[in-house]
Image (tube, rainbow, N blue to C red; front, side, top):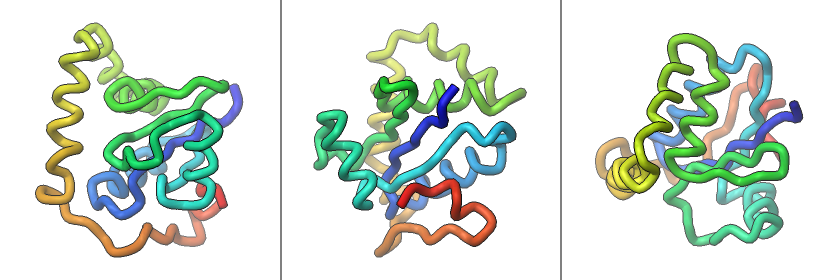
Length: 132
């Protein structure tokens, strides 16, 4: 399996915490990361015809396919090992319900978790996981 790319809102504290969560549990080095605001993130959005104004979503690009919102998050969780992979069972919940919960968090993420003025700068240990 080729490495999957996670596109995320680079100024969102919740999104950055989620990326750090994935990095700590990515034992098989499956994921690479790019902020949606970065040149790489913007190029991937253009390549896959994604809405560049949609900074409220978490996107997984894997094997040439694009997944968004709750489906992307659950597909990532599935590859992180036990017990996180158990969350993948939520795929049985209809997508419109999963995405409604996702949109609620996405809409309030800055209010609940805050935001940064710039995208996070990874430390030397994980810098190779970020696409430039």
